[in-house]
Image 1 (cartoon, rainbow, N blue to C red):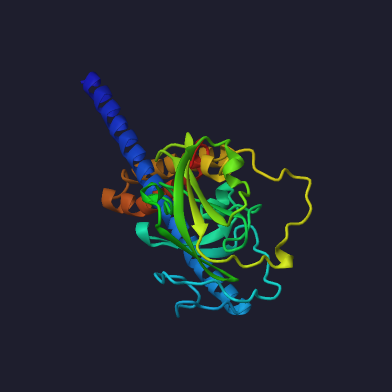
Image 2 (image 1 turned 90 degrees about the vertical axis):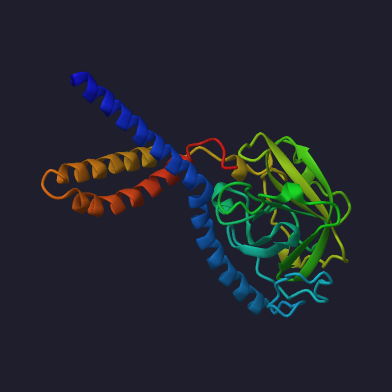
Length: 306
């Protein structure tokens, strides 16, 4: 009898652990998208306000968003003194019709930046300006904006709107490189857009690089967008630090994990004094809210965000 109880307890523990692991996988693939969706909604409003303030010209009649207009042309004038994008702020709107991408691009490629959407490398030109503009994005988490960039073929269009107008790029090549091959961000003497993401999916072992060439003449960079002198290196030591992830403190995950355990224990104890449906009906929602934040903290302990 005692053996049966022990085996039953082990079985229930294994089932519970399996369910929690499956929930964590679901959080990675879909739960992180909730964070990105909220951020994108706020960024859309922010970018629309910035466009209105800058007086950016619309080329397709949709408030300066490029949409499907294959003949989009850059603005003929440079807005006077456009504001420099803040870290994590909206810098552009990218649309890739061939793979269904329609996202606001944020400034920066840190872990927190890429949780909000594709990120623009701060040391690269803004898309539409001369040189090699570069953008990084996730493939499997946080909205997975670049999930299908491996499907892009030569000639596919990438449409981008910035505060200086709308621009059309055409894909020219695809590369697979190691994370330390930062030379793909160099200025090659042409006007290109470089998209980077982890490769293969669910791994940060390599980087997939999509190169697209600007189909029109670039718009000169306003003087105010020139980077300030800095003692920092001109290039990152690896591609997409925000994609590979960075280790965070373990304490938030530990404390939230203990909170989850205590909430579930309290609900179980409550079943001794009231009906199970009442105990778990009250404790269950609280448990799952805390569990969501536990997964968020635990996820930051992992070596990659993909």
